[in-house]
Length: 122
Image (cartoon, rainbow, N blue to C red; front, side, top):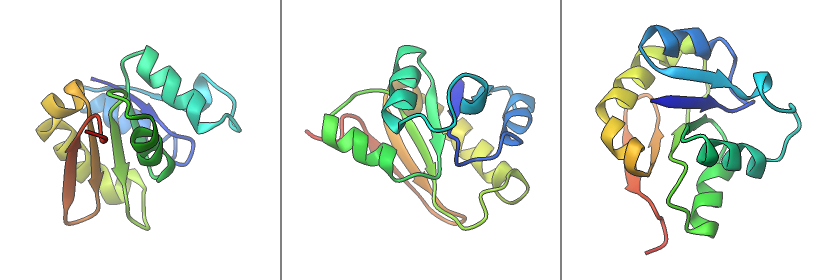
């Protein structure tokens, strides 16, 4: 599974995800730091990557556009470091791999997760 990490997450996530077997790339290595979310969204869709973010804008983009891709994995916690959330994020990415590969929005915190299949507008 290919994962695109948003600018609002540390590049230190990349090796953590790679060690877990994911193909991970941080936006800073392919695009401008000040790029619009729509650019990341388009790149992820065109490259069949999942957007991993802490930003609410990606779920809004999915809702507004009715898009079926890209999938979005959104973490909603104060501490978004791999040290705090790495194990949980990896477990959820593995558990919901099928849904993410087929189009889903997953919103997770330390204790709960919510899965919505795409498109969000039905």
